[in-house]
Length: 234
Image (cartoon, rainbow, N blue to C red; front, side, top):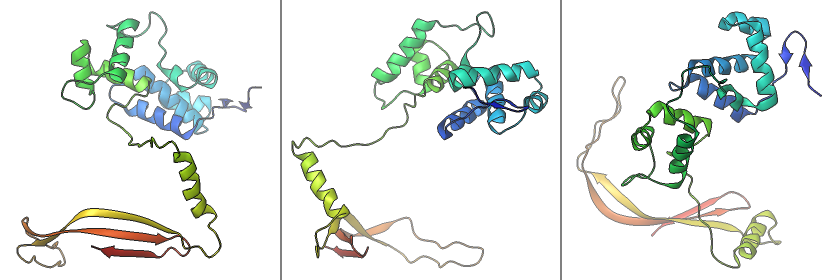
């Protein structure tokens, strides 16, 4: 059953991530003007504005606002990128080239680089950097971002993990549970000359060069029961 808001139009409910994506598309330099306009329509609709107010504020017709309310309500936010056949500037690349750009982004890396940039991919594929940027935005591809992870190959990893987590969640009676970690190779540095102290209207100073006094390793333990931290350097 479709929810209808009086004097407003179809109700559009977006997840926070979808709203953020619309805001990014709306403000991005590489976004076509018609797509940016559609994003503004939807963002104002989500904010609760009526169709008439949206139309007057953006200089479009009310049927246009109603159209994009309906399409995004039924198809989702990526519908704003759909361009009717024969409308808009003709693309200088076909679906095959789009697929090649996406495949190259996901399955290869430029020589001597950690990831693709818009300029590098555009040069490699013979298209403009704006074309690459639009495709990456459309498919939510962000080559410059990465997340670190580590997977244990220990066959008994889950069993050990359960035991460790169990100590934190439900420790035995009168058990002392400590979370221990270390930070090695901490450099003990000292400046070669004393700096000037902080004063009103002037920040403190220190020399750019320093002298080394060896290294140390910090061992620290967190008492899970009371939150006390125990630390020693060796």
